[in-house]
Image (cartoon, rainbow, N blue to C red; front, side):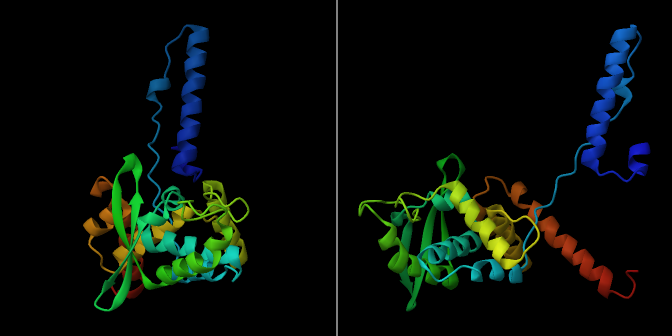
Length: 244
């Protein structure tokens, strides 16, 4: 109770409780007395809700990329992270052969084959913004980066011409955040959270979002509905005359 009155968060309370348990267990062992360690309850840390970026923040990150060869590649990566909701490891693992182009009612469409956890494959459609960014990269940047014409990796390191590393992809996101003036720590996974949250906010079926994210169980996807419900509660509380 004292820890809660000190207004510590659940994680801090849990750490302090574990430390107290260890202390009392040690004292009991030294004195030969009975330990009261088991009577100290350790709260379970509440599962943190994923942090979604706003649509404006996503646009700032993407638009911060330069129009040079590396910037064109970086923009394509950021666009794909947001357009597909794929993990950064899945994006850098893409090969040229994973991109399928087709024509739907006179409109060019692109589908990407993503390899998820356990080698499970899923097909994810790509919107017009990401399609354009990817086309720019494939026609302008990648031919310059490629040292070997047989290289299958989609995204290449500009110096070595080999597959871009996960660390480099993280750095691309970090640099974009700095250029955009966004104070909060932003990771590639933030694009995945935003993808799911924005789809659900827009009325997408949770089963469809589950399939796009490559979740084995819809239970994993349901955490994003909590984010959406929180937004609904905030809107309700601020707008409804009898919510006060």
